[in-house]
Image (cartoon, rainbow, N blue to C red; front, side):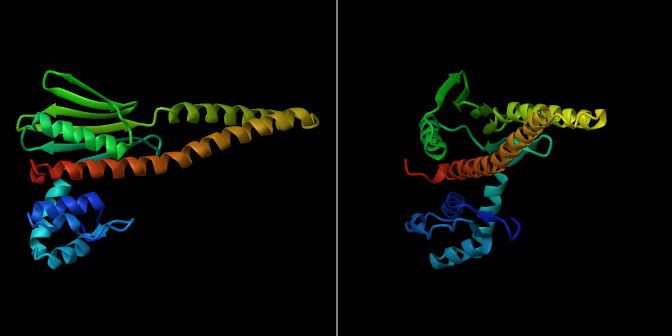
Length: 229
């Protein structure tokens, strides 16, 4: 069972309720708050439409099992986000096309669709969504990489390092009387540090947003079997 503090997004709430029952009113449950809903809150919603709390808990567990998510960090920074969603069967061409529509909506990007035999993919820059065969069915691999971050980090480190090393050398060498040189070195060190700081500050919201989007994709995949045909 998911931990009590686990919060589910609005899309995940819909998928849990769709999996738990085929009640006609399920699609009109209260929207999730910006911070998401806990399992207990979803169970309260389920009670209102006659769904047993145990059924909700089982559905939430199955949803969590649908996707393993990983964030690659170097060094301690979320440069890459990836999620793998296993499928118990092969999805149809129509289901893949509807999933592409969902991807375009969730990521707000048209992207490009390619197919090589049984392999399919939807890509938008560094964002990749791959449909891959497995022994028991298929899996969908979502992954993305913040391609600009390494360059900004490396440039910032180089600039900050050069400026700091120059300042240290000037102090040790007794060249503190050259105000222009010291100002230039200080500016270089500060600019490098600012570049690093700005890059880091952008990375964490980016990674969090990508994780949320991938969780929404996983929730919609979990609801595939419950969509009207």
